Length: 334
Image 1 (cartoon, helix red, strand yellow):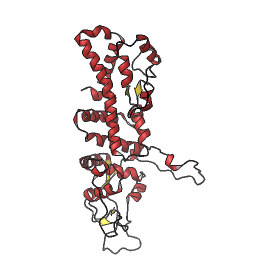
Image 2: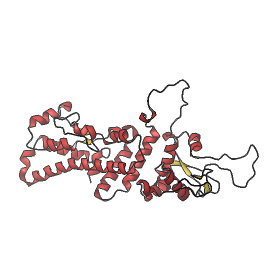
Image 3: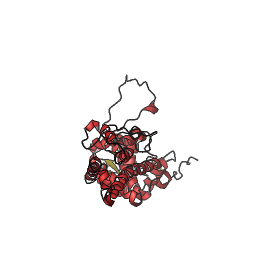
Image 4: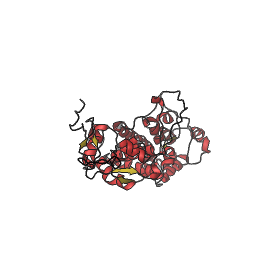
């Protein structure tokens, strides 16, 4: 039921959309102030009589976004990690101190009485330069099929991933946090190129029963040199949550964040699905890593002869990647 004007707007705790309130709290109190610029939206004071030329404008999310050339949804997400209107209302009251209700009764408004009354604006380098649309421009395809990432929306999405990762428990959660350390330290231009080896291809490559000719055929693109890339001779039926088609057709390298950008471009608010994807990435990486651990264990128990040569070299190569802080395997190096 829609709220009545003058009544309290509908609010929902971040838990309602799959966000940990502690993660939202950390984002607004620590990360947003560190990465952004504080700003107090302007609003006329209640009970003050203004002249025709000195009345303060009533700013809202849209006007603030236009003022600083940032997408309005990215601005809201930068502050609260979500654009869900009910959760945003909760955050406006709890963190911004809003207490004035909009004329529609649906939302909290910025006002002079709000304490602290501050939101945060992304740094200039992360904002979008808005270009006015051309009058004669014609679009011949359905808007729902259009999804374009901007530099700020990409960074906003990665901040969401990292925020969600901080709330994941256990050893898997620790690895995913380290995974996001690698991602955020890499830089936006390289996010789509981050990769790990296909767990299914690893399983076949390190299997001593596999004929060595298949290993040679599977590494032709790099002539057997590390790191491998291209397509191996082994493949599986169907796609996987994290690896998608790359895993199914036997590509050596899986690009998990390239797939995430494709899959979540139009739906960045499905936090449960995002969390599921992070678990899936860790699971597939762990499967491949575990296969190599098993081989190393068997080798240590006296079966090393079967694993000499290409297999031993490959395991050593991946082990070296786990010491590289710019590679996803660094998450498994501790």
